[in-house]
Image 1 (tube, rainbow, N blue to C red):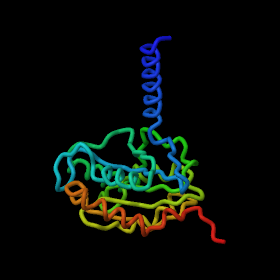
Image 2 (image 1 turned 90 degrees about the horizontal axis):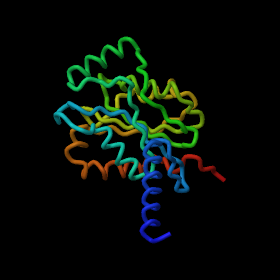
Image 3 (image 1 turned 90 degrees about the vertical axis):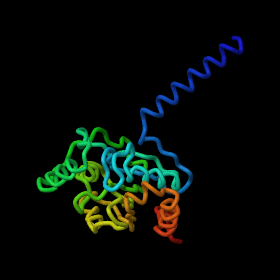
Image 4 (image 1 turned 135 degrees about the vertical axis):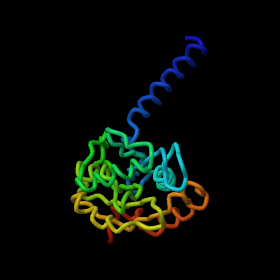
Length: 214
């Protein structure tokens, strides 16, 4: 076999492997010796408050910062039916779903959640609550023995307090202190948001999950 054929076969194999990895997005565990981390997030592209129309929601940007810092795998919580493009319509839908206590069906689920120790859970604050697909995600998975750490984007740098109810929906999970950042701040100045995320991660204690005390 000549060199050209060998290089061609190698390129084909790399393409196949890359395609397989892409098809398993959100299910591949990058284990580096510490807790195994999944960054699961719900985010809305389209029209966002104070920043206009965006291709990537602020929560998605924040999720990527956390994944970069922790070495975690990203998984997007996506409803089977997309939300509207316009913010006004999104909020109307969110209010209706909250009133109905809806659980929108998800497009896909994590196929190997059992392999993770820590789940960073991200979402935008909609009408002072988590979007209903996040509740679907929590209630359709087994979180026994796992640690959930919430993060959110909102109109201000705060969570809503509803994150304290996560264990009611994610049975068996322990919840650590989360972080809330203004969505516009994350979108417009990621270089300033990143150090705040690093400091929070340093203080929240996620690296100690699973360690035993002698």
